[in-house]
Image (cartoon, rainbow, N blue to C red):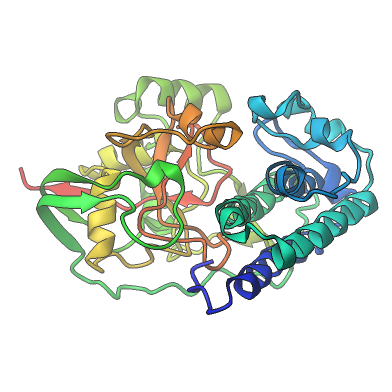
Length: 400
């Protein structure tokens, strides 16, 4: 998606459309029909639902309003595969998506093919093609978000299976950049953050604005499993003074004593990964932690989590190793609107703005983020107890 537009915009967008749609199918191809229907908790969705929902998005916002002769594949699908777009009509309750055993995975493949053919024809022939580009672009970025969720959600389901199934037996952690930026980033002063220029961004990345930062050093490396083991050995999960009140209540209620998907066998720690159950590598970034855990670790370290503004300025300076492609990084910034933010009119305005409360911002991208879907201004967000995402942290140290 980061590729610049060619001289022929129709050709560019047709290629982008097919590339993104094919990536979704490639990620789902490693899963059986049984894998694709499971919903392991209310916050996750079945693979089959992801495949259908992103297809409904193009049908609802691109084809129905703009393709004059378009005939929906099945009118009932609008109810089954709408997510949270209240303006677009009624929908299946989110916690009950796993009950949608019918239509079958084969029918969903037919649905995708039907919409792909109609969308391709529209891209090639629409007289008002320039007006359609923003809809196509947000639809593709929306689908890329679901490509990542497809992997996080199936990993959660597999983590509950006592046979430890592997999504991809050949999967390995990315190599990463190591200690490329040995000194980290030391920043201070007034800086501009947010999207301001060419290229796509979601509306929550705008408008760009100035922020004043006190002197701070952002760590060049991500926190590792080895460092997390030290935190655990020092009573990290049993010391209430390290935790926010809601965080320690969650630790006690959920019985947390290690990051998500970690389990101990014969005195050694293992973690459920996309490659199945693997022994913990102390040198790899810690992953599948909540904001509550990240905050407690920072307090135990005598340091802080960076704000999202500090993270963005530091990343722009080139001082952050593995800023992208390993784990999302929790910040201590609440997910709220930038000064002057206005949501878009209509149903698409429900995409981000109405979720700007009670969640925390993560920056960067993860090993599950599709190619071309990362940028310095991207604002991911989850509830502070969430840890089924590929989420880790890096630390900040202020001059005191």
